[in-house]
Image 1 (cartoon, rainbow, N blue to C red):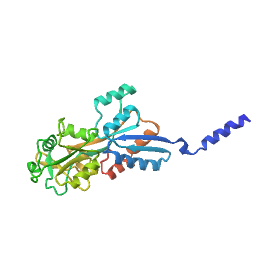
Image 2 (tube, rainbow, N blue to C red; image 1 turned 90 degrees about the vertical axis):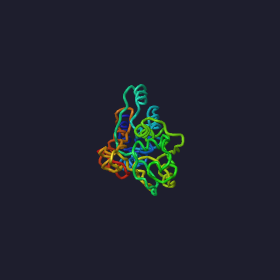
Image 3 (spheres, rainbow, N blue to C red; image 1 turned 180 degrees about the horizontal axis):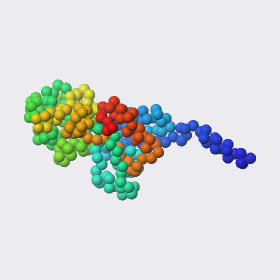
Image 4 (cartoon, rainbow, N blue to C red; image 1 turned 30 degrees about the vertical axis):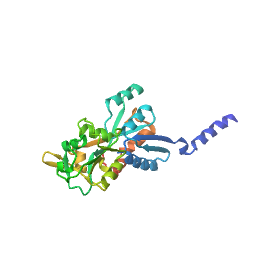
Length: 273
């Protein structure tokens, strides 16, 4: 009788629904990337219903911290990992972190649609955000104070702007901090003397500024961002503790596939492939 039970048990296990063997992929981090991550997850789970993908924001720094403490499989980041973050991961997991570029973006500065200013230099943007320029009249606009918005310091976009625009200087105390790019866009759309920044995909209901470079005004267009001509073009990243395997590899392969990269375009970013 026992000899009959073994093959019957094997047949029973094979007949179990696939959902019983389902896996979970957790993704956390960049608010810039959260909509993209959610769209990838939705499309992926339709193709792979036995794998659950959970996506949450919080900022690039939050995602990278979660990767270090083991509470996420993937950290989404709109900036490159800092050396100190990399060193901590390497020390804890005895291996260097794995970086994957999954999309391209251009950090865009937004103004109200009624604002006559259409382009600023990097130097003008820096002087506004460190507090040296405080009115639109100083940069060719109306005689009105500039109401400038920024992201919170856990944001990869905040770090990118601080490094690439402010040249490492601190934001002025008067700059108003908002929790997420969508909040920045909403605030700029309502305040006619405002200035904010964020990813290109969020630029709806406001006007995008061009960046002056010499005699040229460079728009954050698809061609300029993909070619790197736009001065504030950047890659968007996935970070992992090790080379992906299993469900994790299946998901990342999907994000980088033609179907996954088409979703990048649909969301408003730009493909890496």
